[in-house]
Image 1 (cartoon, each protein chain N blue to C red):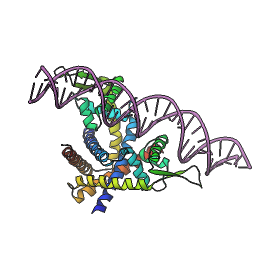
Image 2: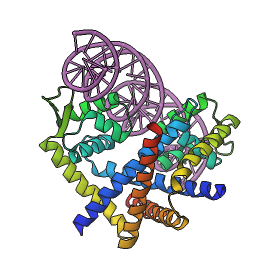
Image 3: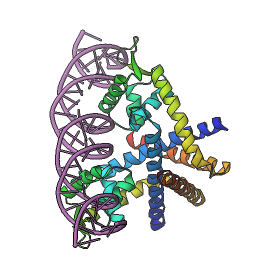
Image 4: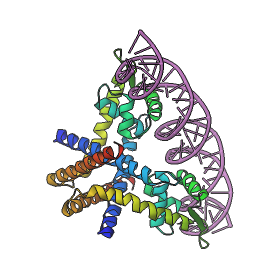
Length: 151
Length: 151
DNA sequence: TTGAATAGTTCACCTATTGAACTATTCTAT
DNA sequence: ATAGAATAGTTCAATAGGTGAACTATTCAA
């Protein structure tokens, strides 16, 4: 039982690394403006979550607040996001993507999704659905487990 | 069709990020000596691939050779790996893990696998098997696709 | 109204990565 | 046999990304 588990996790880890590396290669290839894949991921998150804060991003990506400040500064200097201080609670700074940033996200998403989509033509609909369902279940189980540890 | 694809990839991306973040949290928690998760991943790769070279590692992780040199130096300074120059082709430097390194990898793997294994108890055998098979298929498809692009 | 909590920034320091220039070695084609 | 292409690895300067502690500003709570 233990040996089988180790074997399964090894296979999982191998395959996951290969997928992760390939997605990264695709993204590096498609993001042609002067931003990194990390910066794009942050920008994409801000675009998907209106009125989000630095603390939200720190939680989402599992990094400290000071790392987010630095990341946000880089995006700000490139004119891709703006900061809005909340006037009813002046501690909060809400982030939003500028027009320039929205264009960049949409354009890049189209390119990346097309490239990944090409890979998915090898799968039938049912296989994709059940794969993603399992992945989402795994994510939920892990999220709950971590929340349990920290509380 | 296009809209469904985008929706699927969004779900995939969300779930993947959550899993990735949680695995990272588990690893940070279990790797208690003074090494990072990146360093552990490299060490684990060297341990699994006897006589591997810097170039192998660069390909595996999708980074430049100079990044690997730096990484290897950090592991070397901690006494976890050693370098062996190939006497029949003196361009090659084979890497191997020291006793200290092997102990570290085994100990940490046990801890990490136990933590991840706990999450997998929510899945039945068939679901895990088919999930990993799909993941491996996706990895293969992507590997072939990339190889096609570069050739 | 004082002290705790929260949100964000700054700072010093470290890790990770890039890309170009470099050394050393081996292969290959004439 | 040898000139030059190819390969393996390193060094270096620059940048991105990360930590953790100390800090400012603001709001909450007893």
